[in-house]
Image (cartoon, rainbow, N blue to C red; front, top):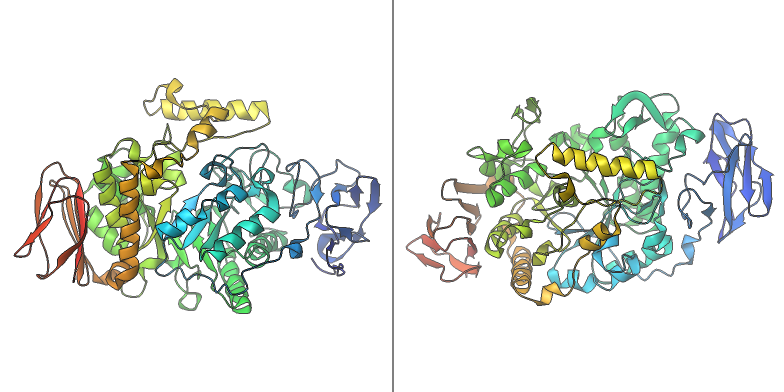
Length: 588
């Protein structure tokens, strides 16, 4: 914000980018004052405001609007902004040195449904569960302010503000501090490819969007047209603010394939450069994890080698192949992953589509990963995510249709793979609660359009319209909240212990977290539904089938370190494995 005069501690001097405005007023509760124009389309308030003061901006005498960079929107995006003093929090994480993504286990959670209260402060009360589980990085789904109370968070419009029903910015500081005190890093999910359909007033301030490209959500964010310098700055400042001011350790970037950008220096490369510089300044690692549909290893290739330089990217192909193995589902994009060798390919090379034909897309897709140079930890794999569960018609988890033995097989393959594993909240105990699509749009027309659109979409796939939950119903949110009495009851307690033991083995046995993709060996028997993964001197064996199986081990002398079902025996290099069972083997 060029030319912004410094404000005293605990105060803020509001400023706004409005290049097309002829006049801008700072609107307070007791009146309005004119703001002064500065270079580049910036406008500045004359006097600083104390923490707690509420204000808006009026452009050319129009309706007062909230600050696009507001750190707090106590009444939601349509209400006034409130000045926040982030320095007031007494951080206790002075000794925190961050978390490296290499070797880490990620845990994805949604604040609104992680606990019955649905707040950041109540989530702190469940962090010890995550410590006992053994995860390293807590990924929090988007916190950006949006209209209404309930939602997934991907319709945020106040990108700098923490959604008030979750507790607001000070609660997020407390949450991050509490995570660090327990040795947990924090990854925040951020959305830069679109804003929500309700409450988005950015276009009134400047050219934040362009019709030169179209996205599934409408006009694209303006990253390369006229005025895009400040738009890119808006995004980069947002990212750096979470990492610096809230002590966040990583950001997960939503759907980067929808960030249309023809500049010679792409936004993602510019962002990764800025984040690396901040990491050097802070003396702790900072990570950027992309969700990308491109299957392009260049996303995580270092900038010096011609890539974008992001730390990691989600690997949906691994999810799809594991899902087909466990469930047998082959509709839609799962069809390609039912082919022989698909599972072997993703466990050894991450992408099934690496320049090959994608029947779902009707074209060739992707490019191969250099298995010798690109470590597997740069790819985040999962059995379940908010997308893969919540975008099903009824939000049914794997545990809704699979027995615990089959779930245990999936966990063994995921947690002992060369990729970075990510769990979705409740997965570790086979939660019986669904995770459904829910909204709370105040606009009745938008609410009805979303409701009918959801029902029409799944009706076209053979679902009864009445079976699809109403996104606007409070019951849909309530059904999606975890039941924290389950982890102490069977069969949930046994599955939870299995996850804990797998994560413990992964940490204790370097072979099981070795990221070298070129050293992974996989044998898969599709008709018998058995898989044997060799990881150095260790092996992971699963039998998803209905009959006992005999698997020939690649090396004699291994012992069963962990098994789901007894009797699991090794005799002369042959492992006898019961149906729907898994075992991890290695030197005693």
